[in-house]
Length: 96
Image (tube, rainbow, N blue to C red; front, side, top):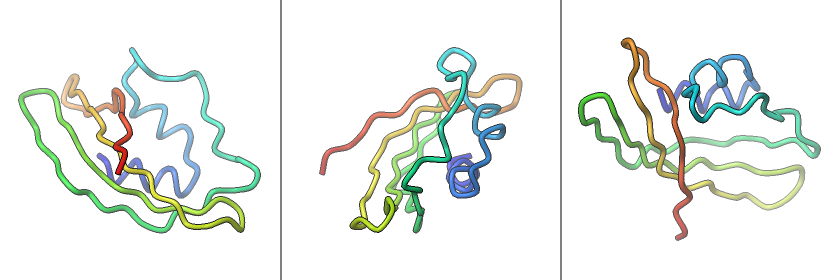
């Protein structure tokens, strides 16, 4: 699930991202056509664990905005399984 959502961000697939976002926390829209644009460089899943119908994934995604310096997004994401499908619920940033 995490890799498919990362790929959807890279490809700016808003419909897919919204469809895989849990209805309780899903935003109405996403602004994936930022200016200056975000260029994604890679995803590193650090840790993943599943307990019943919940899961937690820690990852680092590397990106650059416009011609700026490279940045990293370090997050722990929460997922919930409903009717056999996994949905993104929320995420919290890790300060490192």
